[in-house]
Image 1: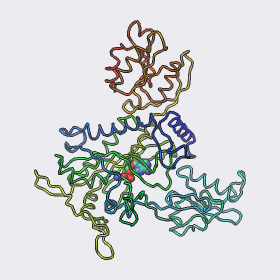
Image 2: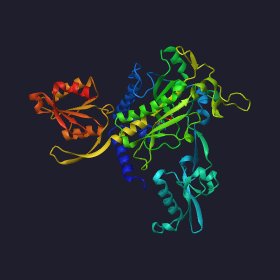
Image 3: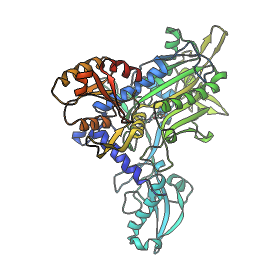
Image 4: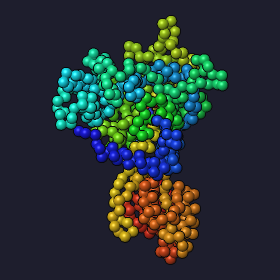
Length: 548
Ligand code: GAP
């Protein structure tokens, strides 16, 4: 099946709305923008804040440690941290990021474009004695048609003679074709090249952004990194938290913050950015209970997205196969969403829930670990010494009730705030028809965001700018604003004002009209059902607070 053109153009309309209504702008746009970096505008910052606050409230601040939530093996505590972006370089050496957090990239000498090696696929094409391995950087359903267009152009074959091209083998990852000796880079026609042989040998590329510490930075000891995940700040503070607060295992530490990855090919709007925010929990538990906790967090996090209104049919919970697991992981599941920029049937990761065993705490105690004979051992260099030395601090936990000492196991639900915002935006985007003031159908664009996420909860609209209506509206606006984000708008026809609020995702509009002045009721318009009801002016604040 071909790429779903409707969904791609839908994605274009979502991106256009995000720009037009001030949700998301390209970073440094007036200078031509910066690939992989995005700014959140007035509505976007409110949406993202609401999302992060919903996460923090539901996972950390609002957690009731006195009762076991549904599905949890027992009650547990939650607390939070806010760690620095730049940490001691040894953190990344012991965590494995320094050695292992890389992608393979490949450059095209002709087009000057750079690709992720694992994103390239290809197959052989032949025409009148000429043979070439046609490479595409497209994914899913787009990949095969792209190779056809590329081969057609390369051989100079007209569209009606396309069957003259002979295809050899099926589309396969370029890396596998090269490794298996089925293709040579010298024969490969790059995705944007006119002639074969322009692709360079693949090179390893560490995704961590590097920086230098200090004014006189120069030698290697000054090298530092912008964190590629917030998780490590939690692991290295495990002992601090245990020693200074009253938490007992099992407990979790949550953190929301910026992470940075020098992605080779940032793409799909904010989905793969170079600067983004994560919302991570490291949950510490007894090794024997860890499998039950893993299942609890996987199901709890899945439900969170559903409760905030993501369409169930577009969400997928995918358990990783054994060969997909990181070298330390005992189990991982991804929560994925069918983003409109993906081909039909494809899903993009929103969050990963990983059972990390005792890998992280032990790494920061003992040094960088590797898996050997089914267990984890400290990696050593040629001299027999640890390749990356740990802190030497004791990060085990002593349970003073059971009198046991152990290194807790970790369950990590790790979500991306930007990806979640993007999923909620895509899911909320609807186009429908509503009757205008004369009852004629008018097309509208509406964001059906959950009221908790909506940037503006209510708009207060005087029907006309006279007869005392603005005064009543302003009074209501001021009373409501103490409890929720709302907007006062008296500009343009009421139909236009409704349309503006629909595009911003505002769930409720309150109109002050002639009747308000006589019976002190207002019209409450519901964004999704379009039902308009009369509500006593004095009850509006309580009513909307209840609904929120
Ligand atoms: N501590 C584990 C960890 O960082 P990850 O799967 O690499 O795991 C977790 O990242 C989440 O962070 C992802 O599910 C995604 O939502 C978000 N994320 C990762 N890389 C991203 C990027 N380049 N742009 C936007 N979000 C990203």
